[in-house]
Length: 315
Length: 150
Image 1 (cartoon, rainbow over the protein chains, first blue to last red):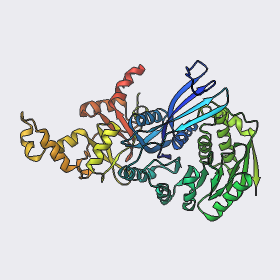
Image 2: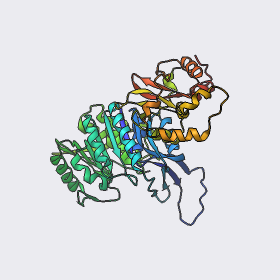
Image 3: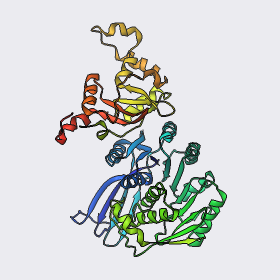
Image 4: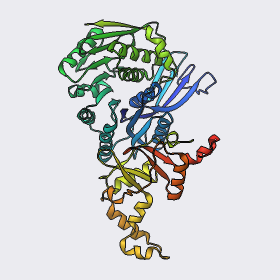
């Protein structure tokens, strides 16, 4: 069983339009689409894991009507929920995918403020949930009111139970957590190209940064940079890998890294060799990018896409 | 045969035996549930607290003797007494004999248990672990699928 933690989840309002313009009234036609679905990185990973056949418990904060919508929807997908409800409402994140101009516009709300007693209640609940899972995913931003140290506490608690932690969040959150030694670090660098206190971009820089983390922290087994899709860099204790998808046709980037990590976790739990785990993760990410939906719908396509991933091993 | 495992409402949020009554009431209100499971530090199920359990506890002792006659308890007394209990631990209000089911139980057994006990939901347990709830509406919707409860 896997536990995904999403402290700042969202309802994703996704509009797929054929030609988006400001100062214009859009009425959707039959080629266009509007979706209202559960969102937030950890929630997306849970949804993908369920599609891949892995049982998942989703926890975090939720609130109000949107919070109930979020949880109902997750349960309908077969995910067990254990969200702590707060006085404020779950935020709504709006994405506008323009198929004509091939643009993605995103507006993310900041979310509800969390009082201290709700955080204490969540941490109590989290500690109990650790008794029934063997892997934890901490993903996404922190809501207002939550101390920055909460992820560190959660990592240490999980490690105390011998549980592997996958960490996926912006550098602002991952940077200070490197020394707590999560099993896998995947910084979300889509909009911020600084990591470890320095500007970071390009294969060589990613390899260098990954090796520094692995050398420094004995508990960290994987450092993966996924945001440059054409060159995904994965650093492990033994060696490093660069993974490149062939003939990439981007349809929708939304949820790519979440699908990648779900693919990674799914394959890792099958005890596959490392190169095959990374290949499967990249194929899952690729499958997600080339379809309209933000989570994987077609798992057979992942298998078909495996041969489209070139794996370069770097010593 | 319809089994409980196919109708579980998979929410496992619970309160800790050491949570205070304030947290229990807040959680029930925000989660829109009439009863909430109580677990120990290890996450093992130990019972349930329903709205009825809290109401029963909120009637002051001196009123209880009159309670069974035509006497209607004064709201101010109940609210006042309940306010004094808000810092008490959940375990004090927990019904450890609250009926439960397992995933392999038949839905007819669960329906019978739910109707006889007049509860709104039954905790579903696998060993000592809570894996969800079986609600009245799940039993009622069995018939919508063209099934008979058996």
